[in-house]
Image 1 (cartoon, helix red, strand yellow):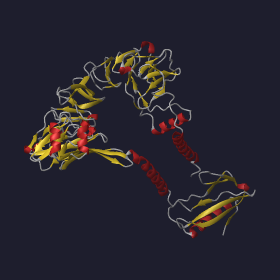
Image 2 (image 1 turned 30 degrees about the horizontal axis):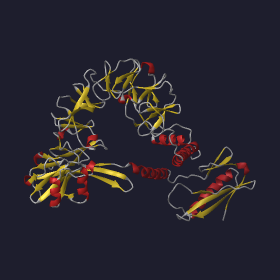
Image 3 (image 1 turned 90 degrees about the vertical axis):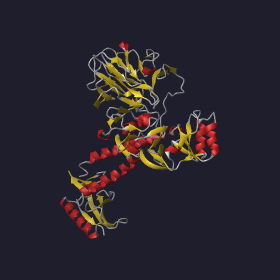
Image 4 (image 1 turned 90 degrees about the horizontal axis):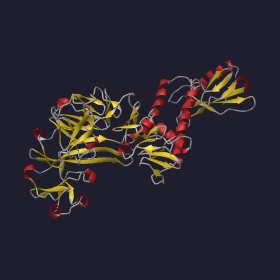
Length: 580
């Protein structure tokens, strides 16, 4: 059986060897780029430059690439335009970074706007920001990087300026939304069609911030009837109250939340919350002490897990009758209780970031009716509050400024006076008070936790190992108790049944010597055979068992099997003997 599939087996081991060799080559001989940020070169616009008679393009996240075939004497960039700085051209081609935009005529190149480009016949969208090249696999990247280090391949294109060619022979115009354009019949986002969209009325939906600021959404757009997240048509009709909510803090703001006030609905990166649990209410638009955005519904607190791409429930709703008021950034009163947010991260010693969480805490032994603000507006990084004989600092800096909790307790009167009277109080002063213990964690009860797990990539190597073991065990199970002879006879040759498949001409064989040997490690017995040739040479010893099994075999079983083999050899005219 193994002999039949020998070429497949050889190919598999050659591939494994090639990958291993590539990894070793990378680790031992990483080749540096011929040009870097500090290299003296002729800068054209911050992306393109000329060095030693060649044109290079800078691709953020992976440095410089040579623009193969570009003519430095005729190479030009689009002048005074930052958004199109990644586009260059010479007398023959138009380039997105170091890659040719095929079919685009440089002599008729026109900038449409919103990173769309045309020559009147051929048109492209090309993103202004570099992105990871998802079409390049991990194995392909390793092999290309090894080839680069050996001087037999170019630098792998693991980052690029992604581009899409649009339908030909159309006139395109930009539309008032990020990466949006249209022809007479269709609208496009990042070069891909917006299904059923009216190209005349497509426009961005507003982002609304808590302070009244309004901006254009990069992700949500409408034609006045339909609503889109990027290129995805959402299952709702447009109404004028629809808006993306503007969140101040870093991590929660990385997801785009569309709010439909008419139905109380939320869409996170285009994913719909459960309509049956609506209406939803974002508990805070600040979220400086949060890693997730929490939405309150009547039966619970919900959040969007950006890793699983699902809406999950963090806890039952702790707010009395789902009524709460934000009295300070990420601090809430409900009934006569005080709640606040706290962010946390879990890091493994060897595995890096494992998870990020947002906690809703209830401040213990403090009634909202007894709480009053005693600091003035001059304190710009937070505020001081008093509840009877206890004092608290309500923070406005947030976890990105190393203040993970919205509420800290102040233990001494000196710190209270310092916070309420200092006129030049900076963020460093607040952090120092926290580090020194002057601002300490308040006594509180955790009532809700939203967690997003990370860092499971490190398990991959273990899965590969366990998967390999499981595969071997599966093969053993499927072939259990099947006889696999130590040799096979084909076309006048005796062929050893192992990975080498060594051949011996039958007429050159003097005899085959068998012996039974006790296994040192696992117990039981196994067979061993050696071929003695007529010219006096001998083969290597070949170890075998009577069948595919993981259980030890008896001496009698092995002897009986060897006698069967000797009988088969005798029919082929091959002598054999049992070594005592």
